[in-house]
Structures are given as structure tokens and as C-alpha cells.
Amino acid sequence: MDKLPLPTDNIYKFYALFGLLLFIFAAGATVALQRGTNDSVYKLYVELESIRATSANPTAATEKKGEPSIREALLERLIEVAKEDKKTLSTYLSVLIAFSILLALAGFYKWHTQIQPIQDEMLRLQLAKLRREEGGQTTRAGFRARSGSPSARRSRVPEAS
Image 1: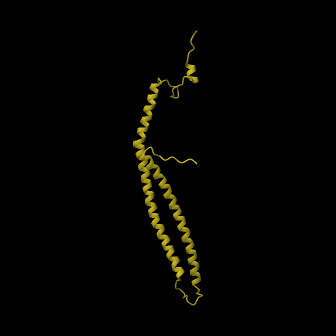
Image 2 (image 1 turned 45 degrees about the horizontal axis):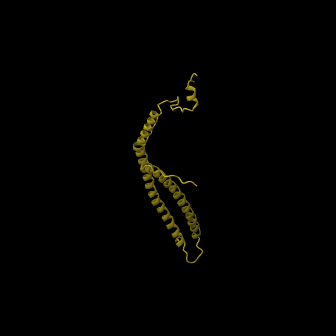
């Protein structure tokens, strides 16, 4: 399996692509956090309501009507903890998403305004140098015709012998 090459030619490209990757990870983690917390809280609520339904009709002599059992109190606390954890992790993921967006935007901006114009200019100069070296003969498409190509052969006039 081939490895995905990392952009190591300039730091701004790395910032941009790393910020983009970080954004995708944080967005996926946010969705996973929402789903996981909702599933666990739903299961806890179902169990809590079933306990409340059975505690409305106490069967044991130690249970008193209207008094929460230890299991009921534990489930309520687990629901509270799950909601607090979801809120805390959502805050952290929101900060991570904001950071990743800023990193990607800054990287793309610097790459586009500082690095890419230099690379474009270098390519333009290389192309101009090649055209000067080869005499500047070009075809209709803007490329120099090779000596063995059909368009170059058509332009030759046969010598009289």
C-alpha cells in the first residue's frame, strides 16, 4: 500500500492541509460525541424510568413510597455526569474546530499570496528561457514543434536536386 506523501516543500502548505485534516477530525469527533452521549443517556433514562415505575409500588419492606433508591440516585448522577462531559468536550472540540479553521485559512492565504506567485514566476521564467533557447518557433497551440513532428515536416520545402 502506498503512503500518502506529506507536503514538505513549504510550511504554509503544511499548515493549510493540517488545519483541514484537523477540522475533519474535530467535526467527526463532535458527531461521534453527540451520538455516543445521546445513546448512553437514552439507555440510562429508560432504566431510570423503569426503576421509578417499580418503586411507585414498593415490594420490599425497607423501601418507602416516594423515597429514591440508591440505584435511582446513581442513574440520575450518571445522566448528569454524561451531560457535563458532553458540554465540556463540545467546548474543547469547538475550540479545536476554530483553531483548525484559522490554521487552514492562514496557511492557504500565505501559500496563495507569498509562495504561489513566486512559483508561478519561476515557471514563467523557465518557459521563457526554453522558448529563447529553442528559437521561439511555436505551433498554433503555443508549443514549439519538434523537428520530427508532422507539422514540422509539412513546413519543410523539399530541396531541388
